[in-house]
Image 1 (cartoon, rainbow, N blue to C red):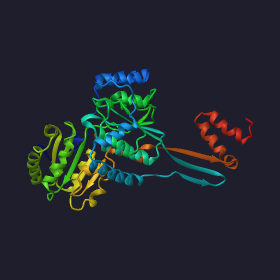
Image 2 (tube, helix red, strand yellow):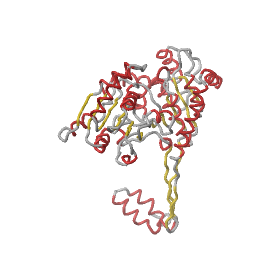
Image 3 (cartoon, helix red, strand yellow):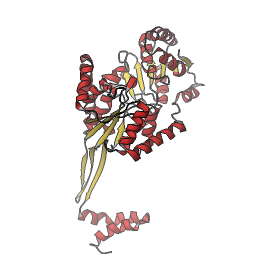
Length: 432
C-alpha cells in the first residue's frame, strides 16, 4: 500500500522536496460562494442564518439558541461510560494546559521609570463544531478547555442542527462538561460569518477556533483580520519513525489511525529496516479488512502513503524535520534520547506504547495541531492562543528631563517633528 523510497546522498534533497507540504490553495468557485454567504450574513443577520440553514441543512428552525433542556436531553441519550471517559479526559487536558499559564511582569529603573507587560484573556471566543458523521466531541474539549484556563469571559459554540432540528447528543454533552456558555444551531460558512460579524442573536467574537469542511476553512480564512482564527488546517498527517525492533502490527495500526480521517490524509513511515516495511505492508492488508472505513484508508494510503528507508534514526529525524508533520511517533526503545533532535512537529509521541490517539482523546496534550508543514512556524492550540499581551510604561518628570533630548534627536532624525514636540513641551514646561 505504501510507496517505497530509499534515501541516498544523491536523492535526499529531491525526496525531501517532494514530501514537503501540499498545496492548500482553494478553488476560486468556493471562495466566491463563501464570500457571498458571508456578505449575506453581514447584511441580513439572523434571517440569513435561518435561510441558509433551510437551504443547506434542510431544516427549518424558529430559534437558533440551544436551550438548557435540550442539553439535559443529550445526557439521556448517551452512554454513562462515555460521560465518565469524557470527564476524565477533561481533567487530564485541564492539568496539562494549566501548566501553560503565564504571568505579566513589572520592571523598575532609576528615577521613576516603570515598564511592564500584562497578560489578558480574550473577552469572547467562538468554537465551531462539525455535526453529522464528522462530529468529534473530543474537539470540543480541546478547543474549549484552553480558553477556559486562559480566563476567556464567554465561549460560544456553533454547530449544525441534525435533521430533526436538534444537535448531536455527544456534542451537547461535551459542550456542557467543557463549560460552553452558549450554543447555537448553525453550521457552515454562515456560522463563521455570524461569529465574525455578529447578528441579532449571536454576539461578535474576538477569535474563532475549531475544525470544519472546506467551506468553513475558507470562511475562517476570509474573516481573518476582522477576528483572529486558530489556523488554516489541511488534511491530517502522521509520520512514524520506527526501527527494526518495532512491532509491525503497531506501526500499521498507527498509520491507518490517520488515514481513516480523509482520503487526502497523509501517512508516512520512515524506518531503518526494509524488513520492517515489508512486514508492515502485510499488516496493513490484514488489519484494513477489519476496519469500517476501509475504502477511505485504502485510498489515502495509495495516494499519500509513503515508506522511506534510511540508514540511521538520526537520518529519519532529519527528514522528519524537513516534512514538519502534524503528528510524529518515535517508535524506539529510548525515545527521549532523540527528542532534542526534533525541531519541527506539531505533537510528538514517544515510545512503542504511545499511539497518536492517546493525544487525540485522553492524554492531555492538545490535538489541534499545525498541518501541511506549518509546524515549522505554528504551534498547537494552547492557553497562549486565547490571551493577548499589553505593555505599559511610566516615566516620572525627572526621568523625561534626563532622557528627553535623546528622544527628540531620534524623532527629528525620522522627520517626525510633532513626535519631538510632544517631548519638547514637557522639557520646557509647556513652552515651544
